[in-house]
Image (cartoon, rainbow, N blue to C red; front, side, top):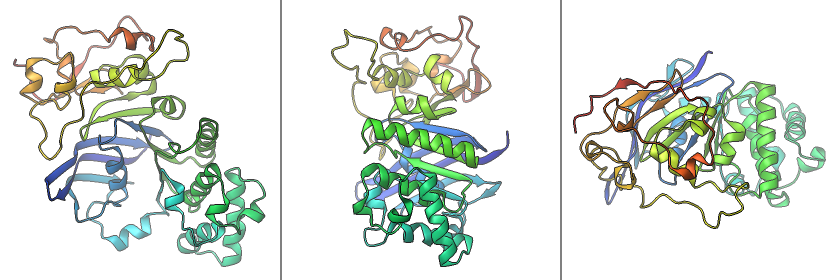
Length: 358
């Protein structure tokens, strides 16, 4: 498959009165054409900062890209100026935000907001842009688009506003669509409709999608691959099957265990990961998850773990995968929610870092 996006060792910080917050700490991943990559993790893990940095939407200052590359179609966009990025945003890459009511302009008709993108990036006339806006509203499943195109955001329901946001994002046929928790504010029924719509549109338009969420149930329905983020780093990455059925990082186990199960009638309370994420103004030495990890080794508090390769597509940043580490199985609460893919799991291969020494 052909790569659309390559993120290499991305580091992003925010300069605050309390010090430098290292929000993203060496994130690397690829995105292929026509693929959906989900980035999951708790609030504060760096998901949204990573996604907004890809479009250079973080305010600078106080934000700053401290290092790394963002190769989009082979071109590094990190050095690009704001005027250059304005030619890329909307045309080459677009974003759907979490709350459409705060993203849509309340003083502009929905049709005009779609037309604005078409006129700027597609050089359409007003008449052609309005016709295309109606087609886009039809495409995203809004009834009576000829009427709706002249209405304001407050006249739309929450689900309709999110569909309108998707129409705006897709107006210039972008190669990359970033969806930052686009279904969080919606009820379950509308959420399912929006997810189905995004999958359908991706199949039609062959758009690559980065889907930011904290909801693993959503991930299972939309993603091809999953990146699990914690404390500004990717701690596990693999296909949906690998993350759900053969998870290797204790943090991924905690996320899976916290999922509600409809099959368990005896479940009275949800599992929770103890503690809180670390303060990234002063990141901890070693593994950032060590203080919350019941399976932590001595070296976890002394040295940052390397990345181990479990399979061609599965990577884990944990000392537990070192050949000399004790064998640890996922807890029962996780085993109940996953099924093993094979009794003969692939042997991990060290990708980077030093050997275990403690």
